[in-house]
Image (tube, rainbow over all chains, first blue to last red; front, top):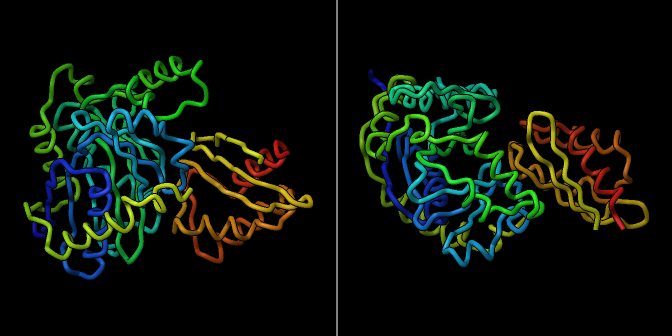
Length: 256
Length: 94
């Protein structure tokens, strides 16, 4: 295993910083200032992220979020609205050069390849996970991970969720439903379509255990060696700037 | 304002908000949980459609052209899907 990637575990941060740091790493990677990177992170406070093309007001119950102290942010990637629970979710990002052997010109193919790291990690935990196009990973036929990818500056950026625990009722409190009458129905349908690591295994899996399994999964499936690193001063300064000037602004979050 | 939601085969959702003037699109916003690369292409599509009449074939051709010019790729949705949702929103306008 010759090829080394940087591994970052940035812990708990707010939504705006989390999204800003992803972009800062992309920019640092595009300037060759940092190696290919796998990052794990979590959200504190819990937050909702929406896809690049979504409308904040259409998707998110802003009043409920404000009352509950839940942040909301627009991602630089497409896809749907996601509730990121502080205790329930582990999030990852992959930032890799576009000319890397793992990257295909075809987006669908690249999703499959990059998700294989997660699939392999989940299997190590004893979960028979599989990739399901376009951008999901399922276990027992139910979604356990959602992923979103973008490219630019010759860098591929994919991030996604790994559900350790899931709470559909809370999800529909913070996400808008077309009408309240069908809220219960939607909650039921999510219970039927979405699962979590704890639910599949029938035991509490700690973040530590989950991360260790995923690290091994990525190393095996990407044929790389992950070395624990830290963010550079350049990335930290840029992340702070992107947070203040982009991800924490109304202009960005409410632009659609 | 005309609004429509269209669920595409495969599960992605397109939402369109538009206003009309003299039977032509005046303002349009295309939203949803799809993927389009590069992402900024959505603004090019919206700008291109302003001033266009509500003709489904024409709309999807115009969108296709923008994608070709920008070497853009959509995932989970097609130009025909966007056009369908725009027509639906147009029918609800007023």
